[in-house]
Structure formats: structure tokens, C-alpha cells
Amino acid sequence: QSALTQPASVSGSPGQSITISCTGTSSDVGGYNYVSWYQQHPGKAPKLMIYDVSKRPSGVSNRFSGSKSGNTASLTISGLQAEDEADYYCSSYTSSSTYVFGTGTKVTVL
Amino acid sequence: QVQLVESGGGLVKPGGSLRLSCAASGFTFSDYYMSWIRQAPGKGLEWVSYISSSGSTIYYADSVKGRFTISRDNAKNSLYLQMNSLRAEDTAVYYCARVVHGDWYFDLWGRGTLVTVSS
Image (cartoon, each protein chain N blue to C red):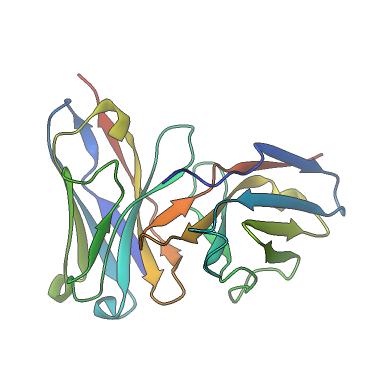
């Protein structure tokens, strides 16, 4: 199972919106609405930000939103803040009953 | 409080074995699927394995199949990963994570334990 494809880095100024893409295949992202997104600050454990493509867990800011079109899922961060600077990973359930993660995206707040 | 705490990491020689443990607290462990996920130094996340709440269903990533064994003891609220025939490429922080079965995402993560495979 190959990793899902994410851009290596995305940057934006405070207050701006950025979007991170996550491209897979019809066997994972395109085949299921089981895409989730995780935020990871340096030296910390990942934190769930989005599940089921677009649902937000309790406690996660509504500045974070998710969507999907075909084999590509996206995470949008609006009103970018300094604390959003972190690595972000997408994940999808697959047709093999396994999981696959994305390659990861480093978000930089300029 | 609700938490997962991994232990058992360390330095091991290539070809050696190690057993990781994950202690769960603050929730009904036996209700949840559980998973191991790893992250090599400076690299991305890689899913390793998951086990159903009863232990009857288990899946592995191809990279560890035949070498790693996941198990659980619901009476002890504990998850395990037996790692055999270790290779340098198994060097990583290993995270224990709770799986929301049916929606298939990881909603609770431990802080991880570092496994280093080196001679």
C-alpha cells in the first residue's frame, strides 16, 4: 500500500486560509468516507483534527474543515494562527481492511 | 483520566526481539479496537497493525507481516506488540492508538516509545 500523496509544505500569513491536499486511489480515499486528519507538533503525539472526511471532534476549532472530491481529500485551515504551525497527516481506511497515511505536510505560518 | 501509555522501547541489535506494551486507563478498554502506528526519525506516520476489541480480528502492514504480533489482555487493559527479526528500518517511535471502529479513525494516542535497531 503506497502512502497517500500530500504536498511537502504549505505556508500562509496569519489570518489567511490554506488548503492541504491528500491524493489516493479508488481503493482508499476515493472508495470510502473514512478519511481523517491529524496535527502533530514537534516531539508530540498526533492529534485528531478531522474524521469521516469532514467531521470535527469536540474541542477542535471550527477553523479546521475537511472535504473530498474523487480520490483527493482536502484539509482547509482558515484564519491561520501561529499555533497552527505543525505537521499534518491524512489517513484513510483501505479496501484491504488496513490503513494508509499521507506523506505529511509541514505548515508554516509566515 | 483517559490515556494510553506505551513502554518497552529501547536499543536492540538487528535480528533481535522486543515487546512493547500499552497501558490504557480512563475508558472501557475492551470496547475498543486498538492499533500500533510508528514514525521513523524525521519521517511520516506509518500504520503497523490493529486488533479488534475481542482480539479475533487482526491486520498487519506488509512491512511487518510475519515478524510482528499484536495482542491484547482486556483483563489488564493492555495492548502489546511483539517484534521479532528486527531490522534497522524498524527504528521508530511506536504509538499506541485507540480506533473508533466503524468510522475507522484514531481518536486517542499515547506519547510513544522509541525503538532503536542498531548494532
